[in-house]
Amino acid sequence: MVQPIPREILAPLDELLDCTCCPRNCHAQRDSGKLGYCQSSTGFSIGSIVCHKGEEPVISGADGICNIFFTHCNMQCAFCQNYQISRNNRHAPDHEIGLEDVVTQVENILDTGVNAVGFVSPSHCIPQMEVIIRALESKGRKPVYVFNTNAYDKKETIESLDGIVDVYLPDLKYMDSDLARRYSDTPDYPSIAAMSIKEMFRQKGSNVVLGDDGIIESGLIVRHLVLPGQIENSKQCLRFIAEELSTTVYVSLMAQYYPTAEVSGHSELGGFLIQEEYNEVLEEFHRLGFYRGWVQELESQVYFRPDFEHADVFK
Image (cartoon, rainbow, N blue to C red; front, side):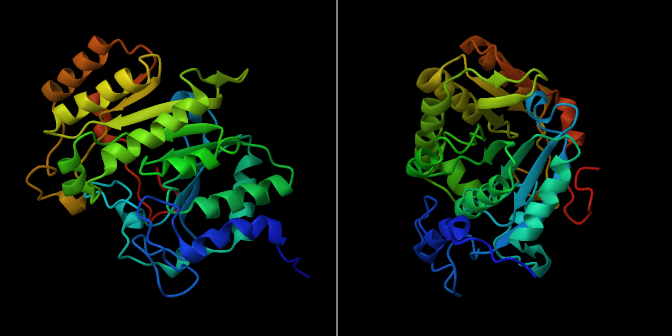
């Protein structure tokens, strides 16, 4: 006989009955048909639960991280590499799975020696994330929890995760409001992301804690993806980190942009980042005094391409 899930584990889902968990503040009744911007319910809609070895070295290590990819998103970036599962106008019933199945899949990966669980695009599913964490901990599991976010998060939400999330992995996308509006339908992104990342920095500071195996146990790593033709935006993002946080923050500068099928004909996003553009961003990175983190090679454009239509997403 299947035992019912204890009420205290499911309690966070109550927040979705009048949802304000992200900056959209939709007040959606996600237990009904009155859904909000993300078009997500109170269930567990997950594109993939997979062992991923392509994150930063201190996150993936040799064994990888168990990444949980939520479907849909509170941003709709035109260039999203996860577009197969992130579009809010697409619904795949097979992505809806029960909590027990989620936990079983995660435990199976943890049993291989992986000791970290990453929540990817969790901003619109914070309550579901907390339920998964509670369910895992009820089984005695204590992995490192990584919050892999687009940073379009409410400061109050990040405050509520203090003591729950071990590692913050935000992607600082824009410091240009017009660009954020045109590419991601988020004109307020620069101010929202600034507040949320400042709160992450308040909690974790600029130092990361590594275990004996060299894998991160606690800390903050700020990512930035350099977009073709938008070098000034990248410089502004780096300046924000340097001036509003610290040049001692770990920064992951990414050159892996590639035009997906959805932007192949886009006048601005339809091409690749070129070396001259990337060199200009790298010069600013070094000029500002950053010395901790990772810088991708331009050749990374041909790697890190997920395909959520296959079981092995990153093969």
